[in-house]
Length: 77
Image 1 (cartoon, helix red, strand yellow):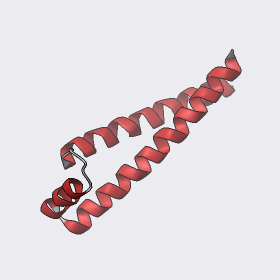
Image 2 (cartoon, rainbow, N blue to C red; image 1 turned 90 degrees about the horizontal axis):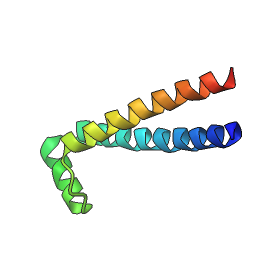
Image 3 (tube, helix red, strand yellow; image 1 turned 135 degrees about the vertical axis):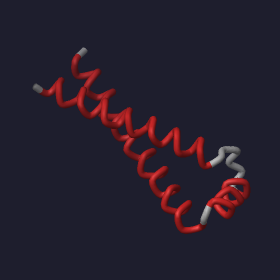
Image 4 (tube, rainbow, N blue to C red; image 1 turned 90 degrees about the vertical axis):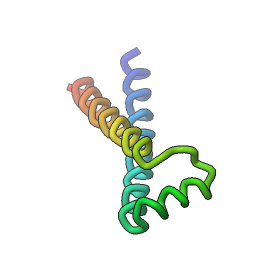
């Protein structure tokens, strides 16, 4: 059972890391393009989110990444 939990946490850690990286790149694109062009880019890509929503989701993913990492370290001890 403990191995299943470790594998699940590991997979979730990888998924959250990938999401944080993608949202980090989105933040970089936002800084390069500016707010109005970034909103137009999201609309062109058929993404119905605003930058604020992307920003909030990225922080949630970052918190999940940190919490899962701490849980994984606790289980290894």
